[in-house]
Amino acid sequence: MAGFVGEAHTDLPAPSTTEAAAALVTHLHGDHTDVAAIARALAGGGPVLRPEEASGNGLETVATLHAETGLREAGLPTRVLEPWETAQIDEFTVTAVPAVDGFGDPQVSWVIEAGGRRIFHGGDTIFHGSWWLIAMRLGPLDAAFVPVNGAVCDFPHRQPPSPLAASMDPLQAATAVKVLGARVAVPVHYGAIHKPPVYSQVDDPPGAFGAAASRLGIESQILEPGETLEWRS
Image 1 (cartoon, rainbow, N blue to C red):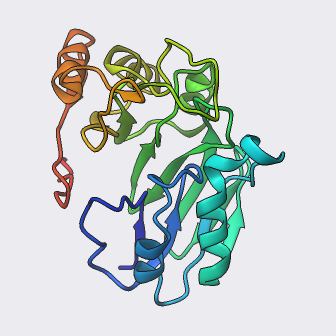
Image 2 (cartoon, rainbow, N blue to C red; image 1 turned 135 degrees about the vertical axis):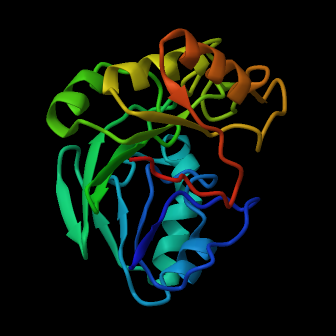
């Protein structure tokens, strides 16, 4: 069965398959759109599903410029999906759903359905008001992959810096999963970067998320790079 490539990171192993049906990217930051890894996985010619291109000039678009340029130079076929827009890729039904980037760049989350299962992937979104709509329109969900590192950032292209997190912290992520009503929660988006004061994540993101999820009655499962989620009946 053809598969999907999620968000590729340069510090993680390259996807093992060269027969991916498509690649999904939540946004065009370099740590979420690894063009080389995507190109390897899409050797068969599958599309890159993505949000709209950032608009503006100079520092307004600097965070997405590298990935945008890389996608064009690699000649990868891309397709923009607006929030709530659905695409059918082989046996997969893919829906872009609302997300909010911590720095104002275009972002979506993804709900993917195949084989009677439905999962959510949240990239590095912050907490927002569309969780209830996602649950009502696309639930129930079997699993939700949610960012948990609560990164506080001080970047030169977004000054003055904010003391508020640019991605969900463990409690926000657990709350989002609770609203989504997913059967299993998997923490993502942590551990790769921690360089205060430029980029500061919370202490022990997966542990803190597991504790917050437990308090809310949510089953959580930590997956290491390369591990898979085994479905339960």
